[in-house]
Image (cartoon, rainbow, N blue to C red; front, side, top):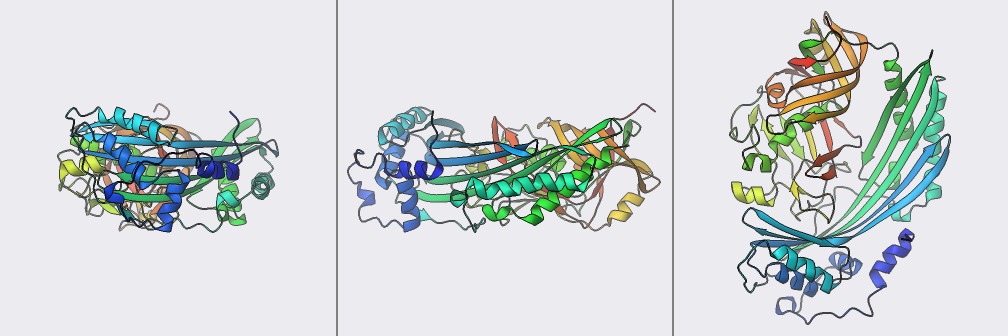
Length: 509
């Protein structure tokens, strides 16, 4: 299949079938309907009308569903890859279509199509409708627009940016890493930008839209010293336009990659066993996200599989622990203007003063618990039904100092650079692989350590955080959260904290 250039593709989507498409007769609920220019531009982009949307929703609700929605998406992703000193790969992906969802009780009917013709949309709507079995005539709700706030303002859109404009930044990243250290032997640079056009309509008459940019830059640094080869990875991801690429970002990532790689030379391993673990600010938020955050997602609690399903309002951590789930931080990778269900996005306290205050909700779970949706219904694309998912999960600063935390440990480890891990959501048991860190002896960081595992239980580790510093930091890397076969962009953060006891893999005593 030939992929057109971005401008031609966008133009084609808006004009290719305009002369041939037969519009349905005007529905009564759409008589004299005023559509704002912003919403109209998205309707035009997907070559649909309010009348078509109502036709499709009527089909989706025809078997007696409780609710239905349409999620339109047009995604364009561009990639640049530099290896061996030159940009040697440049390619693009284009995705386009609409997903139709129907809910009946706690059951979901879902189907999608890569076409936005009325005939094709009605076919998949009929498939989604089969989750119910009580044929009825659906009464249309009054259509109402919602123009959401904009948490990711863009100075220069990626659609207006050429490959030639991006290449100098990728090349400079390569050159800067090589210039920083003579031990550098190989550098690979990835620059990725994505834009999503989103249009949403549901059986309650809500019509809204979103324009979602994403900018990513990553570097892999390989260094060699006396025959020993080490590597490191450094990255940043934000919802920004071309302004994301600048010299300060290049210098920051290059220095980080070289510094992380240098730590690995001469690094060893601690004694294996249970010991205090100090989680460094920022990057250790992956443990907060994976081992604790997923257990706060409402579907696991609604089904009783999460260890927190009976803990609402109860103390689950020290009273200085506050955990936030947010989607409103400006230009953050995990931010959203609307979620995958058209809901407003908000900041919520999952844990406040040590007590469990809220779960992470989508539409289905918020109805079950009788609370407002939190804007956490997320989907990877139009091919997927939404699930309750995290966006930006972070712990706020605590009352202690980093120096006091380190000084309190006689023998333990300090870790802040994780690569991967496994988590049992129900019980909360986890294993994480630590790329690098430090041994702590007699209250001081000593020998660098690398390639160790940390094993524990998320809820217990949360309860065992005995100190938290005032240096809370959000890690703006390329975090992608996996759940139910879907991946969505997220960020996470944490201050420096002390967990009084975890199992650390190392050398035998």
